[in-house]
Length: 128
Image (cartoon, rainbow, N blue to C red):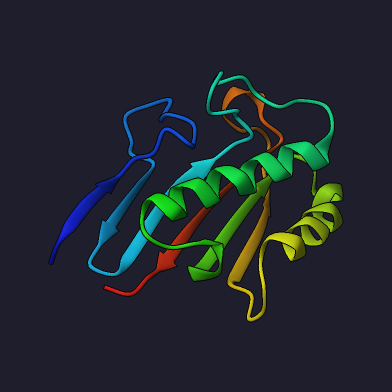
């Protein structure tokens, strides 16, 4: 079993004791991404569309650093502080992913790190 830590400057740095992603053989476990702008580590606030897009952009950057892309994601978890944004997530997700779509969960939560309104993590499977 091989284990590799994945890091890219094109996604936000970890804000705690964790890695952006860990690759074990051909499976990549992506840590949760909130709408942080990688260059400034400032949170995108206000416009929910912009927040969701920033999260997908961050996930995409980590996927690329691991040698894959969003279409290689097998399981996506979405955490929202307000589930009324679920239709917006669906609309934007269809712009970032192509069929067949990954398995997915959408979970309503009371709060997220840095008072973010959306967070996503994923499991990606890539060619070895």
